[in-house]
Length: 81
Image 1 (tube, rainbow, N blue to C red):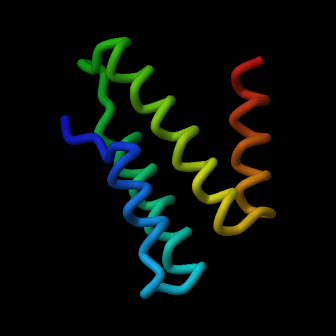
Image 2 (tube, one colour):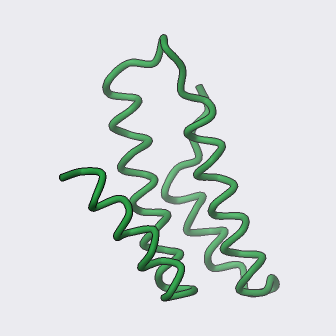
C-alpha cells in the first residue's frame, strides 16, 4: 500500500506556485487516496498511520485555509469521541 506521508503533504502545502485552493485540493486528494488504499486486508497499524497522516494533512489545510481546516479538524475530533 502506498501512503502519502506527512512529508509529502508538507511539500504540497508549501508549493507557493499554486493557489490556496489548488493546494487544499491537492492535500484533500492525497488524504482521499490514503483512505481509498485501505482495504479489508489492511492491518491496524496501517489504519492508525492513515488516521495520523490524515490529521497532519488537516492541520496543514488549517494553516492554508483556516475555515476549511477547522471544519476538517472538528469533524475528526467528533469521530474520535
